[in-house]
Image 1 (cartoon, one colour):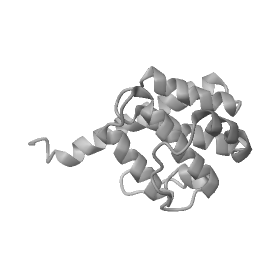
Image 2 (cartoon, helix red, strand yellow):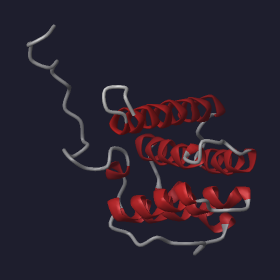
Image 3 (tube, helix red, strand yellow):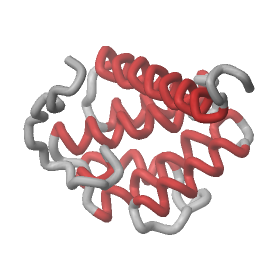
Image 4 (cartoon, one colour):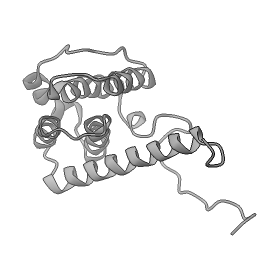
Length: 157
């Protein structure tokens, strides 16, 4: 299909040029996400360089400040159903949170457990959580491949 026009993509409610899934959330939902993301990332006992960079980037994309530990898990879990009242907002929240779980290349059980805690609070089934984690791992792999392609000139580097 060389030279042909790209296939038409259906219209979505995601604004052009915005962060893909965080843009589906309202500012209060994004703030809860940032708090949840920190709670998830810190579960393995450390915030490594990739996790810290991701949290800072997510905060910048959503025009929120990086919120290190501003909330207790129980409080975030209690507020989640009210702040995320519908399926699309809940799924966008959890899909982004799955990305936080795998950002360092490892899905630590404690981080997965936090993701599942939020999914339970939001009545999202386990099978969906597993799909989110699979997607996040695939997306992470694609980004890593892209970085390698950019860093390698014609396979000579």
